[in-house]
Length: 407
Ligand SMILES: Cc1cc2nc3c(=O)[nH]c(=O)nc-3n(C[C@H](O)[C@H](O)[C@H](O)COP(=O)(O)OP(=O)(O)OC[C@H]3O[C@@H](n4cnc5c(N)ncnc54)[C@H](O)[C@@H]3O)c2cc1C
Image (tube, rainbow, N blue to C red; front, side):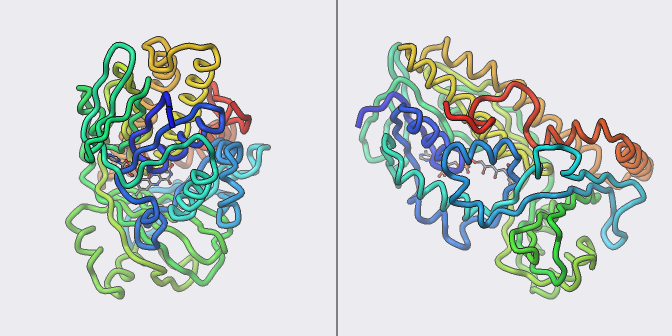
């Protein structure tokens, strides 16, 4: 099959972009280094994603949402506080209630394997996607009118445009000479699911502890939550392999007992946390998308949401260009994508870094300031509504897919 676009990387972002482009009539080749089946294995990835309302609308427009809706938990409320292990939350806390906006829940929590299963099913049913998996890309080269992707098997694929969705270390970006801004947060996220006696009521909790943010994300069914616990790397490594009783004792110091007795409901996973922001989103005949463009701190659960915003914008730019008979890999077309997405990506990545720096410490003066600040914000309904609209992904000039409309 001939396609004008080759997507390198079939993770969450590469797979979504392939579906968005093919459904709008632009055939693509999707190259993924790993066999797709392993993505849905129980122990492949422990994450659960907070997906914004706009992201959900996009997944619905791509016929992906019906494949995950039954296992998605609406977020009805978010509680944010500053605290210390064993002491619970400080005096200042912000409470974001979904009822503050008319559109309904500001987001949903969906487990990684549920999202992956939906993507794989839809990939298989969407005409116009040539899937090469497992197939690793060894190199790529660009010329004036086309680009070549060389697979490790020796085969060469040719297209007008390469889209790099190959993750935060993006080998494609490196080959194109795109530099990255990097920052090691000195934190490792411990991720696991816990079962608890009381119903979580759809409330997500974010507790800023001195070692890093600690999130409790409600999962479908009411009695399970996903934990994202940013901790110093040495302690995180120790806790990952600790016996269950030792791990749960440390977890309870942070989780508290407001949901009754807790127990582990699956494996523990760890993810080292760092910022990895590409200095530009395009190079000749190459566009970066998702973590290949911006690997950010997960404290507000924005990474995949940003990737979906990239996919929605790039798909709209490319499909419109193709309909007008333009070369989809031309600098003019790529500039439109970059102009649409660079500001949002950079400001979100840097905002997450700034919030982490402000909150992840035990400075008593800063702690007092944080608690006062949170208490003040909680009394400002207008500001809170703005935050909720941001979290729901409703701010700014939205591409059609994020409004739930086809391209
Ligand atoms: C602890 C944690 C919690 C998070 N929580 C949230 C959340 O609540 N909400 C949210 O929106 N985001 C969240 N994120 C962010 C989200 O997980 C990422 O943004 C997202 O998974 C990135 O997907 P991607 O497809 O861009 O990259 P990746 O998942 O890294 O995929 C890259 C793909 O490229 C393939 N590849 C690489 N090199 C090659 C090659 N040479 N040839 C072929 N294939 C190749 C890889 O095999 C891989 O499949 C979280 C992240 C972390 C660490």
